[in-house]
Amino acid sequence: MESQGNVPDAGKGLSSILGLARGDYPTSRTRLSFGPTGPAGLTPAPTIAAMASSLEQIQNVLLNNPVANSLSDAISSFSERRAKLGLSNPGTTENLTREVQRDVLLTNYMFTGLRADLTKAFSMSPLFQVSHQFAMGERLNPYTFAALYGTSKVFLQGNMDNDGQLSTRFNYRWSDKLVSRTQFQAAPGAGQEMLQFENEYTGDDFTASLKMLNPSCLDGGVTGIFIGSYLQSVTPKLALGLETVWQRQAMTQGPETATSYCARYKSNDWVATAQLQAQGALNTSYWRRLSEKVQAGVDLSLSLVPGAAGVMGGFQKEGVTTIGAKYDFRMSTFRAQVDSKGKLSCLLEKRIAAPVMMTLAADVDHFSQQAKIGVGISIEAGGEELQEQQETLGAQGTPNIPF
Image (cartoon, rainbow, N blue to C red; front, side):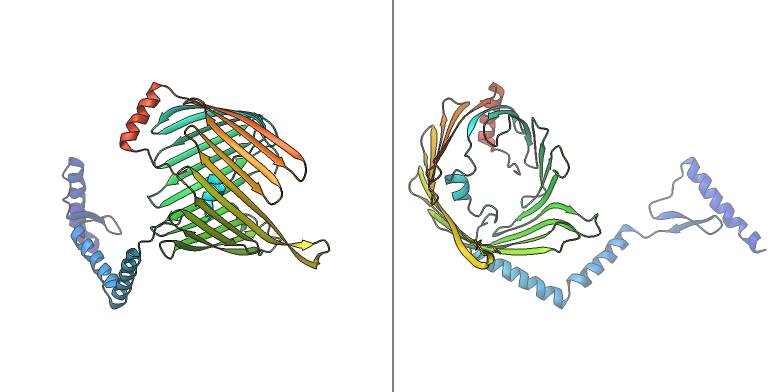
């Protein structure tokens, strides 16, 4: 009866299946559907045009309404006014004083003892090179091996010293404005590991970044150090920003939060910066280009520290002022600085030949009557193929590696 009435439909569905086995496939406008007890035949399926029409209707409802139109007009008007100001990217809060700290002063270049760097470059695009460093002196590892690889999208670097300490870096450029950076350090012994993640977005007139050091959620909560920073150009010469640090060492301790503020003013031939730390410390710097080959800079750090009787005895001011200068010769660079504690430092980098550079460093502390000296040599090896690549890249432009 009812089951007998379904026999022809079942036979029809079976015939369709047998047709599929013979190669008689259905068209794109039909699909094979199955009922509760078996094949129910061929029924029409929704077309791609119908699905696209439904999505278009939903999009029109979400985007073409008074609220969305008003918001879009406000954003467009704000972007147009912002573009008319002619603002440029101010850099990052980490590199706020780069002209003074990295170009003029010797903080990142000073060393004592003997050092030799041997570098072998195998390619320029992509960039690939290895180096061996031998050293004898204070706070210098006897041997360090390093290798790096870089393209316009990826940057890889790894270092390992004679004690087995490993340090790696991995950077990836998602777009022209977004870069992710990862650092990892490991050394023999417990508790010597360090993991750091950073995401940096570089806008037309601002820079925002988020950094995480040893983040973890395995102890029943979030631990680690989280640093967020934002630097915005408000005029063609003035930039303002802030940096917030949130940290928790363990779940048994409460979180700590600190916020610092910074400002940077850049003129045609001079730059002034100021940073106000959460603990009350004030850091200021001033850089000026005196001529095409001469630069000068001043760095001032002022902080409040507890007196001899501790916090109950009040705070006392403690500050250090450093003045430095840099002179670029045709084949060498000379840097010198002196601070308010009576320490005088000098550094000379002399390129003897195209692949060989000599470095001489000296540090004299007049108050403690101590003197230190450092001598270094750097040799860069590359064949004729590397020179041909450099000439080719000179015409095409070097790759923008996300360091």
